[in-house]
Length: 251
Image (cartoon, rainbow, N blue to C red; front, side):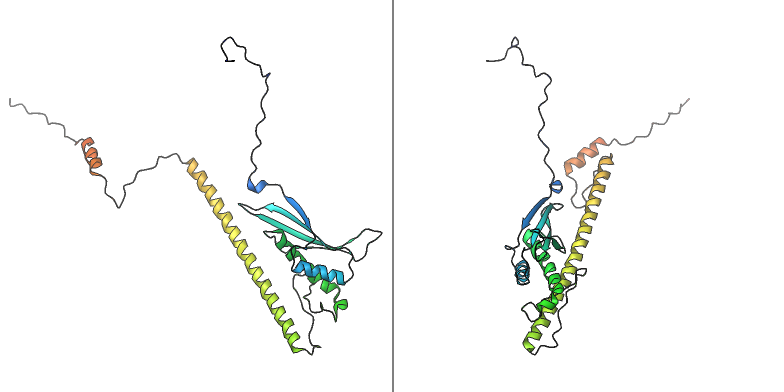
């Protein structure tokens, strides 16, 4: 039925409809958490699992990843792996140590491999005596409080090819870690430069908003002005005329 002037309007009794929730910006997205056993990541995660099984560990490591949005775009993954003790205490497995990836990564699997590599070196260092004469004897080792990896001595080995292989692996690992450190420094400088650029842009925006002067039109130094515009400007300029002098009386 069409509304007319005599049709009563329905009262809303002061009801205010709810507003739609504002869209959250990229940087303020909530942080998420994920868990994994590391089987999908392969690489160091697979080697760590095989080593722990060989040492008699009953509960396998658990990886925890925290995902947070980075400034601008993309996500950053902070991953840590929990290694439990070999046997349970009344059915409850106690935590032996928690190993964290050295740097945040752009994917969960990359963070898992980094954390597993850190844990693998520490486990090899803890059980160095047990790993002698096994396939894990010459795995890189590291202390818990240091990120530097070391290799067992190869003086007693008679196999020249094995000695050279261990030395080559040590050289490659050191070069890889050195390159990793250089990339970290480059990313830090890049982030500092981006922050500086952002601050300068905000400062220029504030200065532009405070400025109230109209822009001054400047002539183009390359192109001459059109003839029509020149004629109009010449027509509007009135030549200055001197006031007529008083005429002298002949009388």
